[in-house]
Amino acid sequence: MNEKQRMESKQVNSSDKKSEKDFSKYFQAVYMPPSLKDAKKRGKEEVKYHNDFNISPEFQGMGNGRKFYIRTYGCQMNEHDTEVMAGIFLALGYEPTESVDDANVILLNTCAIRENAENKVFGELGHLKSLKKERPDLLLGVCGCMSQEESVVNRILKVHPHVDMVFGTHNIHRLPNILEEAYRSKEMVIEVWSKEGDVIENLPKVRKGSIKAWVNIMYGCDKFCTYCIVPYTRGKERSRRPEEIIQEVRHLAAQGYKEITLLGQNVNAYGKDFDDITYGLGDLMDELHKIDIPRIRFTTSHPRDFDDHLIEVLAKGGNLLDHIHLPVQSGSSEVLKLMARKYDRERYLELVRKIKEAMPNASLTTDIIVGFPNETEEQFEETLSLYREVEFDSAYTFIYSPREGTPAAKMQDNIPMEVKKERLQRLNSLVNEISAKKMKEYEGKVVKVLVEGESKNNPDVLAGYTEKNKLVNFKAPKSAIGKIVNVKIVKAKTWTLDGETVEETVEVN
Ligand code: SAH
Ligand code: SF4
Ligand code: F3S
Image (tube, rainbow, N blue to C red):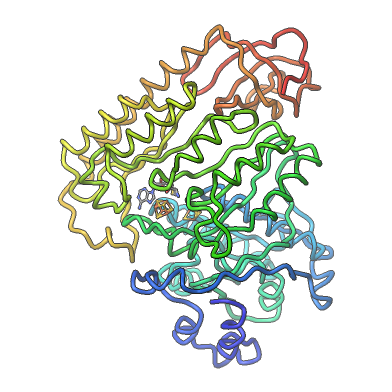
């Protein structure tokens, strides 16, 4: 749904018809549950770019004397959406707070990727009930990916009626209107659009920190891996125009940011939706390469669309870092086929070979799902053997979690949970073994560390990340914070490195 469709559906969402609010009709108008049939129609609608976000005069000052608190679950995309919502709150006059206790508005920015992610949020909603009882004027909202699921919205309506607002990932720019309606209305305000073809460029943002920044390059996902909810919760793939991205990165460089992470669910599909220019991630990286900012990363890559041009550009090095997160999901071609990943074991290994040929020092990390429906012991072992062959630096590993509405959720599964858990353990010990080996190789070497601040456990120690995203702890004057300095690694631990500064903490870029 876009702005025009929203206006047309307004009669069901209008606050002056409160008594007639019928949520079944509401869903027909602005909400569609995950559906493969609808998804196939994607790509035919034109992407509209908006640059006209503003806080209308009626909402100005709405937050004066009020505080907001946002709890974020899930991936970097959600973290960045939180920065946008914080920007809108500030523009409305709200102040941020670090505690739910003195917040006037609490938002849970949720993740739907696995069942346990959702359970955490439902648990939290239960906890917040008592707070809401004590302070009925507190506004409690649920947003993010879970809000895009019909079953979640229905459960909130039934079990958590103390929630005041539910809004989806496409409705963030409507936050002022949603808040305003929630203050006026006694009923739960629900605004979830299921399809969105639009990109809104000029939303305010309050970034967390002044050293590293996220920059969206595209939204949504059209890959429809059979296990995954994201294409339904985030809508269709739509790329931001290159000039907007380049301008944002230049601006961040001018503000003194040292590291940019380009964000998208499948960044390698960047530009595929442009119909007026032929322009991909390789072209974008080539332009960003020229900007005077020390570090540029991107996430997440899909192996299918990782092309030779991108490899060629990344091999130029400089500010383009040679750490690539390349989720493989499984080492078995049969399982990959059932997952609809659109590559097989051989193609993945061939891609890894090409990357390593062009960038001999490149480090790779990955995501793996174990216990996909009917995964056999042999197929699981193929995952282990692929892991050994590639020697990933590290991996995020998950037990498959069925997501309602996705094709895999309909597959019969004869693998008991006990077997899945045991496979996860075996995989994790391999991940740890190879990580430990790779970390050990750092001992005695000098690495460049972007210093982010004091270590969480010891304020006398500073912490930062290497180009390959390894956490390093070392002693140095606080003046090193925000700089890139040379650190000699003295001891490797399983997940972190201990080091000491080399000479003075002179910036090395
Ligand atoms: N867009 C990214 C990742 C998105 S989700 C990509 O395609 O790589 C992050 C990871 O969660 C995925 O890579 C996958 O390993 C895992 N994941 C997604 N859906 C899942 C499910 N239903 N059960 C278990 N893990 C899942
Ligand atoms: Fe999900 Fe696949 Fe899209 Fe990643 S590429 S977000 S796993 S559908
Ligand atoms: Fe979760 Fe949504 Fe990200 S489902 S992983 S928060 S895109």
